[in-house]
Amino acid sequence: MRLMADIDADPWGSVDASVYETARVVSLAPDLDGHTARLGWLLDQQSPDSTWGEGPAPYRLLPTLSAVEALLVAIARKEAATIPARNRLAAAAAGGLAALRTLPAEGPWPDTAAIEVLVPSLVARINHLLDRPVMGGLPHLGAHSRGARPSVPPGFRSARHEEIAQRCRTGLPVKLHHTFEGVAWHLPGDAVPAPDGLLGSSPAATAAWLASQTDPAQCEQARAALSATARRYDGLLPEAAPIRTVERLWTAAALARPGLPPAGRATAQAWAHDIYDPAGVRGAPGLLPDVDDTAMAVQVAAVTGAACDPAPLAAFWAGTHYRCYIGEDTGSVTANAHAIQALAAHLRLRPAARPVHHPRMDLVRDWLVGQQTDGVWTDKWHASPYYATERCVRALLDHDGPGTRHAVRAAVDRVLDGQHPDGTWGIWGGTAEETAYAVKILLADPASCGRPGRDSALRRAAQALDEWGTRSPLPALWHDKTLYAPAAMIRAEVLAARELLTQHLEGAAL
Image 1: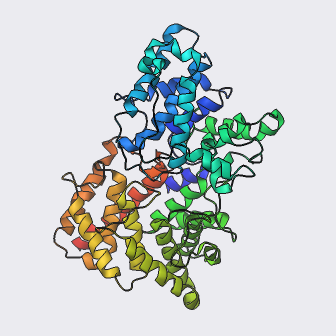
Image 2 (image 1 turned 90 degrees about the vertical axis):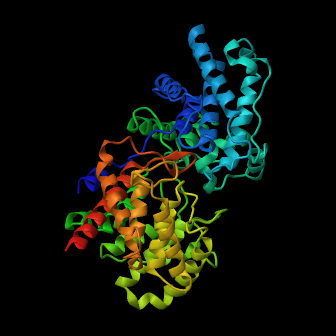
Image 3 (image 1 turned 45 degrees about the vertical axis):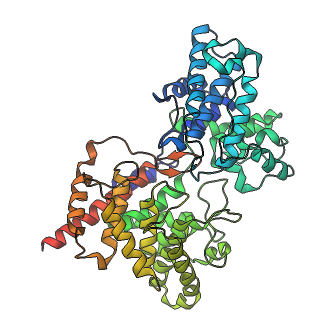
């Protein structure tokens, strides 16, 4: 399969550049090759409403703050030597600051990574920069050159980043490495040891670490990793890198559902074998092991016929469900759904292990049923309920029990009610990705056969997916610090849904 071959040849992963991460590198690592081009790109990414980022207004809060801070840093450094160029930076920053006042007064803010720390940290940095004398002489900054200052939006604690830093002055936990930039200004330079590559897989965190160091010799490896990442992504920076592990596991799991050809099965099996770790799988270098990637490695191995021991999952057990990682604050329904799917797939190969795993599967199943609201599930790793709902429906069908029949039926009803007139599904307008998840929900449940409206919904979805090649690029729906779009993973979901639809419609015609 061409998609799997492309993934196999790319050690980094297919993902778009991030405004948030690129702006952090512009601000914190101006000596990195390509700085001027990154600054120009950042200016070009400002939307007509003067915000930065994708998705509804609450999602644009963090990337807009990041971009504004980076522009103010460039002004403070006097990087724009001519007055017109400096005025352009000031006008863009002023537009972003004004746009921030039009964002929702109280959210609700998205549950993206460390938003509660990153937002107040950036507001503090922006206000510190606006107090610099150079800002007072820039009329293009408007009221902000005369003392106006942004405030931390309602719903955030203005000192949260300082509180976290104070608790971590003797050493920052690994789970916070990915968002180190949020607390870096309030920690000693040795609070985090020199990373082996990117710190916490994050360009922003790595740039913040570099800015905190005084010994150039310690910085060489991290700077090389940051430079290599920028080269791979055309001078810009993604939310995380590399995403090789996640991309390979999620793609293989998606394509395995309609059935992999022998070559694809062999590739997926090799991926799972290489990725699986008896100590738990890390989604990217520098991150903690997590139950999500560990479960997906077990699942992909099992569906390709090569069992991997699911014993590492036990380290994440929380009594009623699995933590995504040790020290997690909020649970993930999709990670737990993946754990059930992994164990179910493993038990099909190793049925003798059923007494070992079934008790926990029962508890996780019941926990998942209890997380459903109005027929859907939501999750912190994705903006769309269609992603979480598809994962949970699959898990409950793999391991049914009390309440599962009602939960699946409610999910199918919500999907049927949510189709747009053009045959697509999506929370902010129809997307190929969300349409794929909706299709898979409808096709997964044998009891939905004959449900009024189901077959017509599937036919309209098939036509919409067939026409999608002429539409705009894939929108960002996945959560990290901001929204991002893992292109290869999304294409795999869409390809799998189209193949399943073809199999269904051909079977119905016989």
